[in-house]
Length: 308
Image (cartoon, rainbow, N blue to C red; front, side):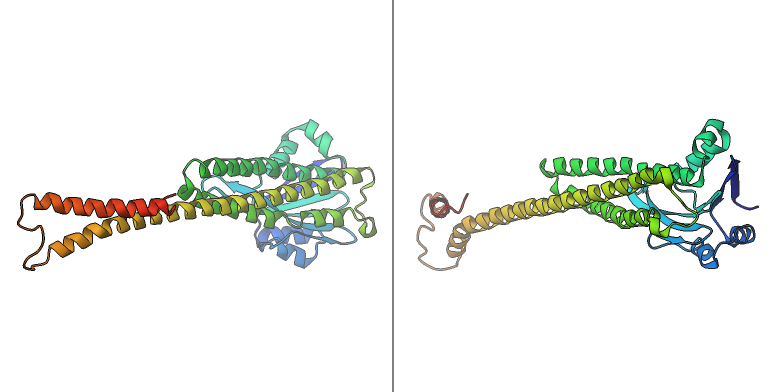
């Protein structure tokens, strides 16, 4: 059974291909005049978004972020779109909720069909806009994570924040890689010099808005990238400061214990005529010598400002 569903309204078709195999590609090959390389691209993971324009249709490869809640990881989800004069074909792995929800809504709701199935350009804009708007809650989630890291760093949780910083930094990097060429693809889409059957007319301002949204998302990610790098440097500085403080304390303890160790070693020798040994209160005298030496070392370091 083919994983293909179709919604038709007002002379416009939306063909939705889910988890495509060679069998689904043969169906598209038989019913549409798509370039073989485009069909081949639908079966292999894309590395970056792209747009190719042909006299009869345009072919888009777009990547959008999807958040894996279990692993707290942002992953790319690919959608391939064929846009003709009276049809749109979407090919994807069914992992993008906005696309899935919009198709299901159009399949059962006549008002949604009237709203979106006016022209192929109108339907394409609605789909792309839904997918871009889906990015903003993820941006808010990243912003919350950055705020939590900021709070954690200055509440004595530097070590715990190391893993959090690396995780959020990875998500921001992946998010940026997914979105980095969107703006250029949308600009190419609305370029009047490349128009064939795909004419925006009154929809041009709407597609220009997609360019602005893609730019806004990219600028926001750039700000997050700078923020997480600053927090990483701050966290590393605090950890280094704490380590240095610990090393300083241990060194001070070792130095203060040195006179005691030396005194104990000297008086522990099996030598004749050792002073104080064998006399009344010899143990107290030795303790006093050790304490005096330790206090003297402490006073010296204090005076030199080495205990700050």
